[in-house]
Amino acid sequence: MESMQITQLDYHTARALLEWQVEFGVDETMSENPVNRFEVKPEPKKTAPVAAPPKIEAGIAPVADKVDGAALARDVAMAAQDIGALKTALEGFEACELKRGARNMVFADGTFGGRVMVIGEAPSRDEDRSGLPFTGDTGVLLDNMLKSIDLSRAETVYLTNVLPWRLPRGADVSEADLAMMMPFVERHVALAKPDILVLMGNVACQAVLGKRGITRLRGQWGEAMGLPVISMYHPEFLLNNPAKKREAWADLLALKAKLGVTE
Ligand code: URA
Image (cartoon, rainbow, N blue to C red; front, side, top):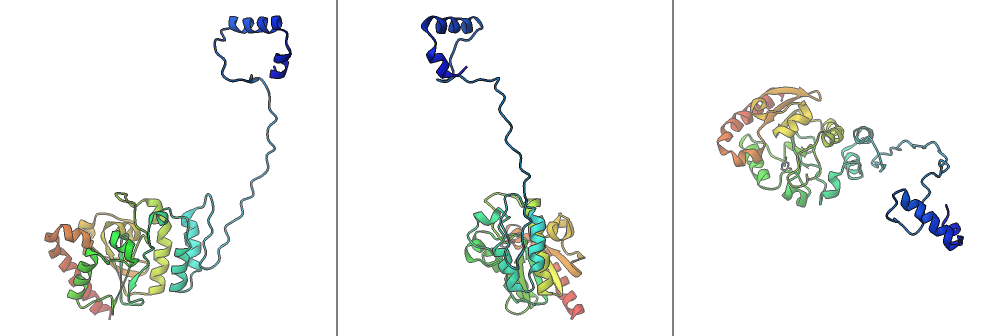
């Protein structure tokens, strides 16, 4: 019944109707205007959703409400024909939420085309500020480790991380973020063409080898992306566990020996 009709009712009819409702148990009014719960509303016309496929141009990743981030990353990364294009593509990649919480994207440092490519986990606070991988305390230790076997960023080593953006404080790396970033890492490796890959810590091992357990994996040679790969303790772990530097030293010697062989 419409509110207009009610206001037009005479006093006695309106009262009789109200009493009738009270008899049925109505003891409260919810709003000024009555709501007809039996009304059948016509269904809104359905129009078929038109999902335009994301258009990939070199270096530009489109933003979409619901995108398959990993698939988009593959397309975008594969479209990059050189290292500059890959960096631009990553800068324009909007599907990874981590980007929104980061100050800077951390892409790479060191010698592009160097014989050794180090893959770390993700920028920490220092790297998020500097925009370069391994620039904090972990970077100092890493540089010393490399120097001990005559390697350096300046001449022989190229550095990157699996994740180019800092993780929120206390957050773990998610499988989804790894899946989304790995196409970029793979393309990065393919363009840098190192002789050897060094995986620093569990996250890099999980991303590249699909395995965790750095205590077991460290010092072992494997193969990934068509290259020899060695896993090592992450320098941050070594800062907190200095007794493990002995094993790290053995792994560095194994790296040095392998470089001699592959020379
Ligand atoms: N830890 C990493 O794995 N990478 C960095 O760049 C810094 C800290």
